[in-house]
Amino acid sequence: MVDKETVLKVAQLSKLKLKNEEVEIFSKQFNDILSFVEVLKEVDTEGVLPFYELDLQESYYRDDVAAGSISNEEALLNAPLKEGGFFVVPRVVG
Image (cartoon, rainbow, N blue to C red; front, side, top):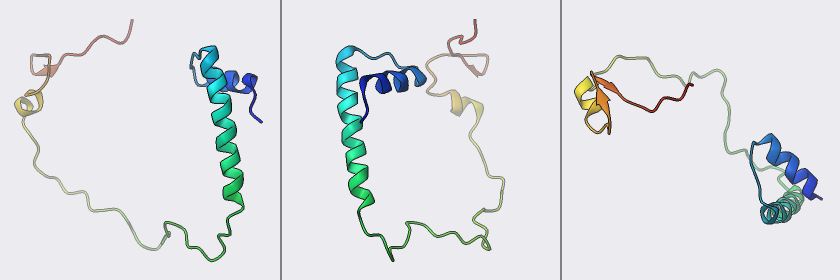
């Protein structure tokens, strides 16, 4: 069972700030999810193929072929702010 302390610990590790009501809600939701996972564990999957198959002998990579690209003007066409041929973005480093 997931208690309030566990929810608060997960929230702290996730850098989330939760209100008391949210802690209650998430505690119930976590328990519901874990109950559902327990139900899924009971499903007989014998003989069921996985969603994917790996063939390590075959290469899934395509050849890297140079192709045309758009011009600088086209790239900046819908930019809300631009200056000197560059995008202008808010400063993120202090």
